[in-house]
Image (cartoon, rainbow, N blue to C red):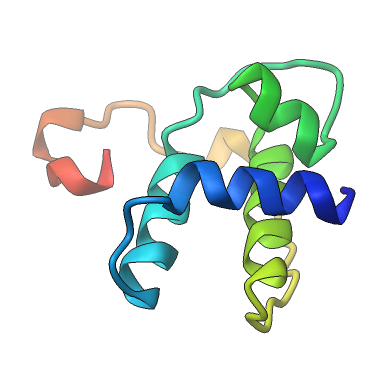
Length: 99
């Protein structure tokens, strides 16, 4: 992602943040709240512009934004089999901040 685009996105997201901690939280919340959707691109700029993306595209966007702020970021890959996930989750029991 081009530096000028990343900087522009950061300004849009953090213009009202009063400190570094609030800036990091605001960026995380904004990327978290991007709806899941297939856009045939994992490019962070596309994910931001279309306000939609897959898990990997959203993670790449978050990574780019945090790197631009000078944070250290590590890539981690986790594998799981969907068939092993529980099917009968009562989502109402999950704390609201984790939904």
